[in-house]
Length: 472
Image 1 (cartoon, one colour):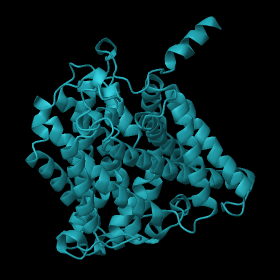
Image 2 (cartoon, one colour):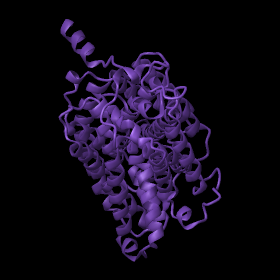
Image 3 (cartoon, one colour):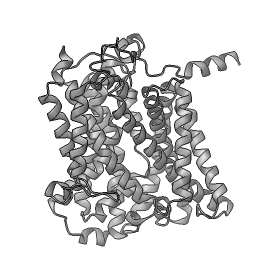
Image 4 (cartoon, one colour):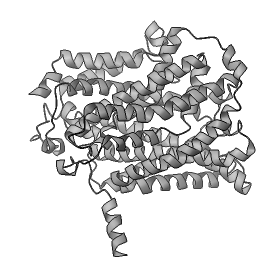
């Protein structure tokens, strides 16, 4: 019993956002490969592929879009991971060096909302899967609103499984992500083979290719729905990487690790939707995919769905806890994880028992948050061109004595470039809530608002001389 207690204690990560001492940074890129692979084997890749076909892309175009959008965006995730290796701290904590200890509050709030949003999406989707599983095994109703108590119980079970791993921290998370990938990855392969048998190949071959503008917009959709959403959390895992790890290895671990499952799932989703548009229009994508499978495949499919979403949620909740601490909330990391889980628990109840639709808010959510996250990326990556080290004490000092105090705790050039890019990016954007003044231009109609955002934030920050101050 004593040994078991010691093992449990060593597994629990007690560190918060403070930089990891260099002697404790012993990680290697293959750890990150499995982390990113596991985080992207969820079934959410299937409706993303269906969206591409709904927008008019032929399958071969959707496959190309999947490669460029997912691998390209996760290459950016890998680049941001380099900062984590350099500074040994979470991404939004390192961001204090760029925006100032108080100016960093804006990007951190956006990051936290992003993580909470993705957790809610994961939890809601998984709870739908658990409801379907209960309907098969116990004969209960499969509709959420018909069984509110069971729905809440399904949400609670998934959140509990998430919190156990995310609460224990980095060491446990890395181990679970690696080994669980083999189990749920194998199940996903079996399910995928069954889904391929349902594809209407005649409809796939008869589809006409879409104009180049639609292809470009599709790349933006996939990038926003995959790598861009993870970019500001990538250093959270790489902070334990050895200083000797090469930058190229970090980029490859993210791009290849996430790219393999995403390309396969997004392409499969586009194939399925080419013959049956129901997947792209489904309010419950779990049920829509299950309807395409033979009855005997339903249980393995639902287990694979829950497992894949759980692996993604582990990482998301872990990063959300770190973002909560970066906001300046003085609690232990494990308690920050608990707070985030409670928020997503309530959000999932809303989407399952109150809201009329699930998938439409999901698409709107990723398009809205892609703008401020991309604006942060532009500034942060430009800063990385000159900054190779971070002051550990300055990152944790929120007073005027901090080396990252700048002017009243705000680095004005970084914050101005970030805010300006957000405004311009939304001018080119259109969603269920608003239509930007420039949304009907060629750039806006082809979903390039996020590209404009990146160019503006990086360019303005560089022109103001912000990046050069990092070398000082």
